[in-house]
Amino acid sequence: MILVIASSAFAQEANEFIEKGNNLYDEGKFGEAEVTYREAQEAGADPFISGFNLGDALFKQERFEEAASAFQALPNLTEDKEQKASAFHNLGNSFLKAEKFQESVDAYKQSLRNNPRDLETKYNYSYAKRMLQQQQEQEQQQDQDKEQDKKDEEKKDDQQKQDQQDQKQEEKQDEEQKQDQQQQEKDQQQQEDQKEQEPKEGEISKEDAERMLDALNQDEKKIRDRLEEQKVKKGVKGNIEKDW
Image (cartoon, rainbow, N blue to C red):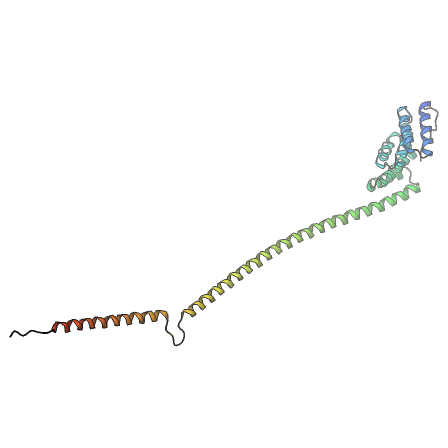
């Protein structure tokens, strides 16, 4: 909805800009209409009418936040309740399209305070409230999801730490078992080596054989010594010459 000039008190040039802008708006040339409404403002056109129509042109270009800025300044430019209600209504529409639902609800409330019987504003107000509730529920769900994701991540980290500890414990146990196995094999090998060194049944050990050999050698030496001693004694007797 755009406003038209209802008074001839405005300067002719400003009126022409407003009328030209309205024609461009009706033709769907919203960008050109925007430029023309700005020219009307510079020419001293009624600030409420030129600002209202500028907001509509921006809204049609889907520049909703810029449109909201244009409409937001209008209620302070008029004392007419109908105009205030229209400005707040379009402000609510702009915020609604920008998905700023809380601001939209607040704007529709202000519009209804100035025109409580406006059915379109009542409908938009109810719709904005539903959208706000959905947004709040979604944000709450997102917060819960983030919290759950955080807990899941912490649980995952704890599980990874536990897995690492378990792995280290298993590696330690494996190493201990390996060392025990090696020690058992070493002990078994020593036992086998010791058994090999022990004499079998009916055999004498190497040490005993060496002792026996030493004893035999000693006995043999003693026998040789006695024989030598006997030879010496026999040699002393010899032949005795008679001295006669």
